[in-house]
Amino acid sequence: MSVDSAELRQLFHTLNNQLGIILSHAELIEAKAQDERQKARASQVVTATVEALTTARQIRETLENVRAGQ
Image (cartoon, rainbow, N blue to C red; front, side, top):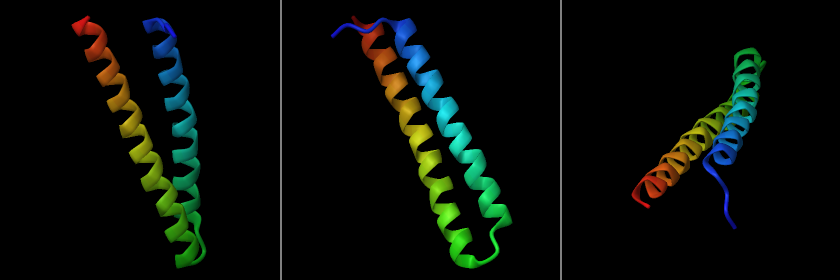
């Protein structure tokens, strides 16, 4: 399967936008949580989303490096 750079950039852009929405909502829920259990759950979503954003960036960079080496 061949995917060009523009398609990959668009996919990563879309993924980052989606994760950004999840992150902002999770942060809002965390800030407004009424009890520690809710706050802890929202905090887990925040942490996981930040990790997913980092992983997406690492994948993008790895693919760019592979393509640059071709």
